[in-house]
Image (cartoon, rainbow, N blue to C red; front, side):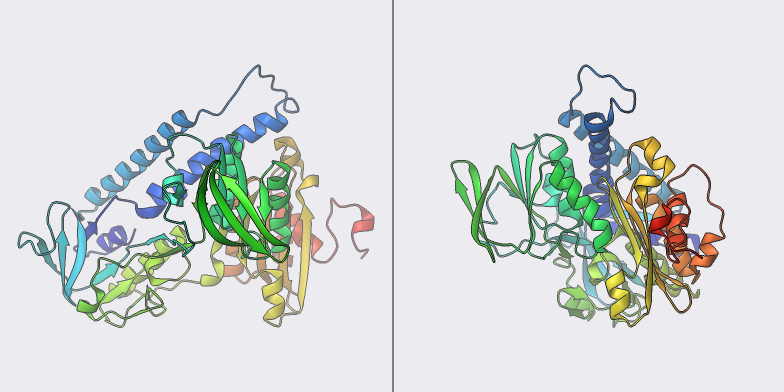
Amino acid sequence: MAAIRAAQLGAAVTLIENKYLGGTCLNVGCIPTKVLLHTTELLDVLKHDAKELGITLSDYHGDWPKLQKRKTKIIKKLVGGVNGLLKNNGITKIMGTAVFVNAHQIKVISDNQDEINNAATVIDFDFAIIATGSKPVIPPIPGSNHPDVITSDTALSLDAVPESLGIIGGGVIGCEFASIYNAFGCKVTIIEMLPEIVANMDRDIVKPLKEKLLKDGVDIFTSTRVESIQESAGGLTVTTSSQTGEKTITAKKVLLSVGRKPELSTLNLDLAGIKTARGAIVVNQKMQTNVPHIYAIGDCNGGVMLAHVASAEGILAVETIMGKRSQIDFKTIPYCVYTKPELASVGLTEAQAREAGYDVKVGIFPMAVNGKAMIMGETTGVVKYVTDAATGEILGLHMAGPRATDLIVEGALAIRLEATVAELMATIHAHPTVGEALMEAAHAVDGHAIHLMSDAVKKE
């Protein structure tokens, strides 16, 4: 995205990629996981709601090999689209590993060249943007190097669904993979060191997801530390410890899902004089490194590791380079979990708002009384506003339920415009839609939700 925006603004652009166009998100992140999760959602509907929805089936099952082919087909199509956009915008593409020679030169090493080969391409540049992304964190757990201990990258492309899967880490990635493999008949166990899964989100919206996972047979152990992984007769034995004592879990494969870290290993940043801290490139608010003409965007700068944040940072960096005034409002970053129910969040959680000193008022509206959610058979979830009691300004919007990841943009825009709940209530929402629940939750801030029983709301 940064390369295309730079070309739009008249820059001569060279893009260097060492593996595949589209990076982590398109190839081993957002896109492939959502392809798998979409099928997971449909399987869940067929399993639990088919009869209620008026569908009679004699047989159905998930076909993992066919799903893998579909995933590959979609990735290939999107990568082809990126390649077409690069050509359309006159961008020079070079496949290979970029290595800084100095602060104004980059050497590109192709797969069949070693670093000292004189045939390596050397590029002079006026400005450079580093966007090397991240790689999975491998925690120092004894046994974590076993071949049946996998990362999120390899979990997307297993040849077959294992009989059982232990997931170390109950964050966004861990919960999404738990949903995928559980839907395909795998026995899944989540082991999370923190007191709750998806710890960065508001508790009121995480609760419905946790309840759904448990109902579907996923075992969840929180406040639990993994001590070791060992090969055993049943596959792998994971030894854990918690306040209740030691416990062992056996699984055919173990997924490490404890986060990602910046990928800087091949860049030779020292030769360009670029500073790093805690394994990430140091940048200012404009994504500028300590070397003024070199910028770093996305996961490699250690900020918010989300594809849409990286895209926004890329545009910010390019527009700054090209002399345009540009900024990012980091308060409006949406966080999404594509499970069932979907989770989506933007702005401050209730706990964060109280910690920041706000006099907080919240409004909560359950999906169970939303007409469109009933029609869809997806009534699990809530909409929750966190507001400033003094001004009515919306500080955060948190959702669990159908289409939450699509609807969260309303909250992001409201926060960007410093909107109040009164302004949102005065905005007509189409009927019947899940989006009506956002309007109802806004009414609920003052206890006046229309479609909640009178004993649940305040009288004016």
